[in-house]
Length: 123
Image 1 (cartoon, one colour):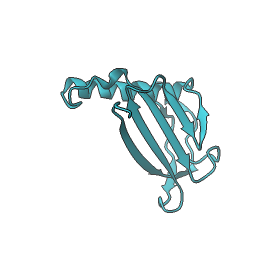
Image 2 (cartoon, one colour):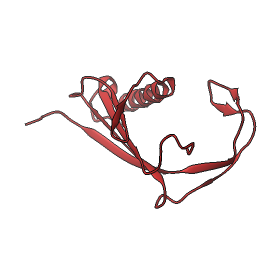
Image 3 (cartoon, one colour):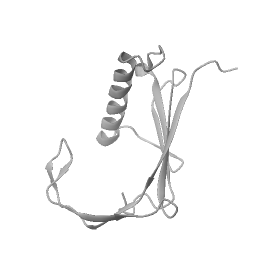
Image 4 (cartoon, helix red, strand yellow):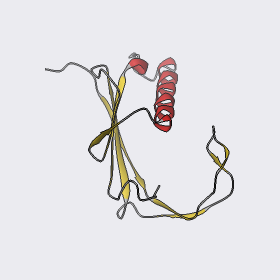
């Protein structure tokens, strides 16, 4: 029997379609757009992304799957997200919100599925 702890969270997000898209960034680090854009958001019953993240001391490495296919964590944007997740986890552990577990060294497995083509230019 597996005695390791697993903490799992799942979220869904609707699709956003840009009608007028911004061109370029005025701040690459903060990812701030150069100009405004106009977009609209579809109902989640139409198109959405569902993402589940799980952390556990049983995991030996970080892993990420997109629509059932394992992807690389080498993408800088994914690295920044992972860094932020760990930063927030560290803050929660110092606030005493982690129930005594030091989860900052635990590895994460992330699985994301879209019900639309991932490279369709939808956000």
